[in-house]
Length: 436
Picture (spheres, rainbow, N blue to C red):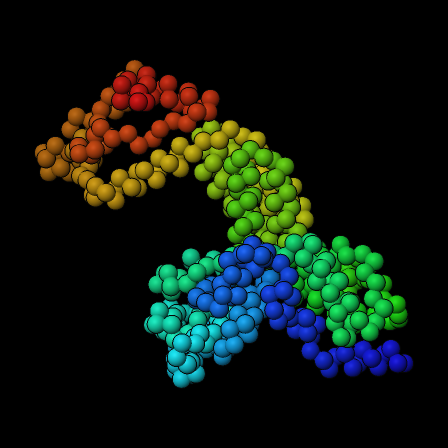
């Protein structure tokens, strides 16, 4: 009964992640490239001269903690704003308070904005003058790429530091600290018999790791508490590999998938495909990306790739999961092992660039239809050569606008199939298609 009542009491205290939040750089775990010995952030904080900066990294890696450590080290007021609930008025109110809380020759108050990428353009604009004049030291935290989400004027006034997911050694150190140093947990006899599931489910997120540990300990029915992978999986009963489909990891994994196909590595491509499947990705999203890759990266080197990718998209739409993984895997391997060519992709890009540069060039008269007598009298269609009336179904004539008649847009790739196409063009057009 005493043990049960203890866990009733533990509910009344702060969450474990909050109790273990570091207060100094020496207590901080991870991000050695920023806060390790002689690292840039440590040197700046210890020197007491901190400029505005933005921390970009996944959840639970210490962005908020670093901001608190900065304010604590500098002994300055700490203001925080919610990007969800704060408007321009709230931003101006905080800036006004900061103006009256600073002292001559002292560091500016710290204004911390978590999830700064959620701030609108007008909210971000309202920060510019205060940051530039040093009224506040802005510390922004974001899980999204700042180059997409933070306005350029604000980004130019701040340093950008990238935080990484915590590594295995960091997470194990955090676990050990939790069970040996936390005022509540160290009262219990906790034995970390297995840590694989704890690490896997946390995904490099310190907060998530401590929340899971607290959940598993709270579910224990007797002492000593021996934590195993089975205990963790039974408590959570969810997919450890799921990811936010609007988040950075979503785009990183699909990028790795496409680059592995482009780089002719079927093993890596299948691995990233499996990551997306296990993460709960929409199968149609994967199929669409395969269609794009078939056209962009394989292209004319193997035109059948586009047909197979389209067939896989059709199949996935009809059968769904879990069988849909099979045609997706088939196309993934086929594309990865195919010869590659981006000549069509580059060709249309160059053509679009040429159109934007040269504007609306007139269509040559001999290529225009002449459905009326007036058009015929004006020379429409006059001189057009119908190629099927000529040997080899080809006749030399001008198809580009007059001002662009000497332009070359499509350049054959180096695959065997495109070499045949190139030789055909040489046979038809002669010197025009000779590569320099």
